[in-house]
Amino acid sequence: MRKIALYCAVFVFLAGILGAQENKGGLQAILNHYAARNFVSGEINRGDLDQILQAGIRAPSANNRQPWLFTVVQTTALARQIVSNNEDGNVLIVISAEGDGKTNGRQILDCALAAQSIYLAAQALGYGSRIYTGPMDSINRNLKTQLGLPNGHNAIVLVRVGKVQGNVDALSAASSRAAAGSKVQYK
Image (tube, rainbow, N blue to C red; front, side):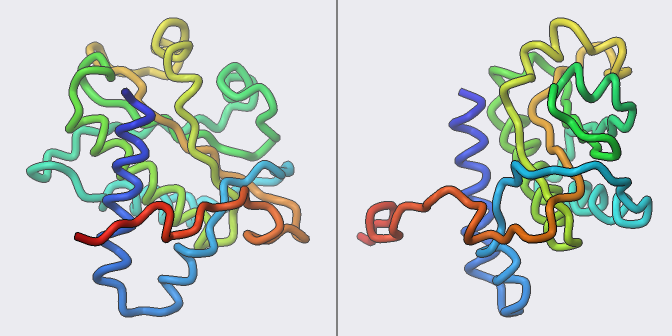
């Protein structure tokens, strides 16, 4: 359910941007993104991190409820409990919301939109980023106290942000994409 909601959120978000976007540079940033796998150690500039978080805060949400809480994990040991191959200096941004994280579709969608905004902002600033949903059950069972999640909150999604190898680009690093003709229909 969460993965379907996440994919729907990404589609809705990108469809809205592509429909309204007139800035060709912004459009290229969206079309050239990729989920990084080649992270290296290195600190994230605090000013850049603040901008990345602002992108999440400014994400659209149903009725402007903004249900999310962003928990920035900078402690390497804690980050590696969540993503075992996390590199020194990478940050994990855990996005949580009140509720069980499984049945409230609007909150899941809202958090997915925030994750997508964070993901794209990080890449626009020259960092690698990757969205994870797999660790959520483990976080919610074992790490909520360590992460300081408020009572009643559950992790929905997380975004990893970090430095990446310099010689990798979106075309060589990205998984192949289906042709638009096989994924778009007009009625």
